[in-house]
Length: 149
Image 1 (tube, rainbow, N blue to C red):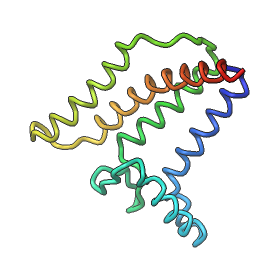
Image 2: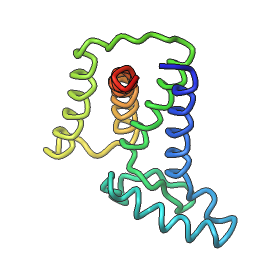
Image 3: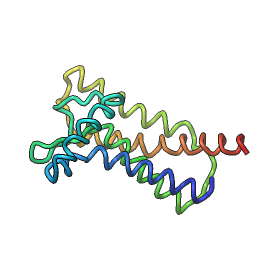
């Protein structure tokens, strides 16, 4: 994947994360408040947005739950790292199984009442999953670009 495509991917992920934290802009102008309503509807298509699981600062909350926010921040982190390291191989599937297993374990343990919901654990499992998952997405995009050439 060329440097231009990798940078474009970083910009897209960064814009998505900025939208998630758009509540920080809502206090600046009514324009941002209206935009926030549109973004909230858009983000609701991919996240449950349970109010108890959002990251909140001064009663203003992210548009994605803690885990989803972690997933996208993990993807951004890995996309930035992969700009510096141009490795094109697909990672071992074991990493994805491990990342998915951690999320599954967290969800099962919480839903079974073994422990209460913990935003740090949710964010951390999302961060790991997003970091690993991005490598698979990037690999798939590289193969698609090669096929389209």
